[in-house]
Image (spheres, rainbow, N blue to C red):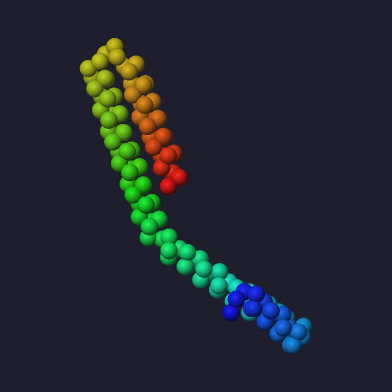
Length: 113
């Protein structure tokens, strides 16, 4: 039965039974509509679920990998310049700024997937 038919049946039942049963009729109608909404939501989630979930996991893995690689390379660059390049510590600023920019651009571009 369609939503329109359900509503017509509820109104008709209200006319037939009178105002004493109005609360029960409304509750029954709302219960049926709630179940229909739940069914439709479940149906849509089932259609998009596995594909969207796999894509989300893939993006999360890529973000984690980029973060690990970025921090590792940044730490390595910092240690190298700290130990070897006494007068070249100013190079740390562009290295870390570059790492931050790469991470921000990657995460903002991937956040829309």
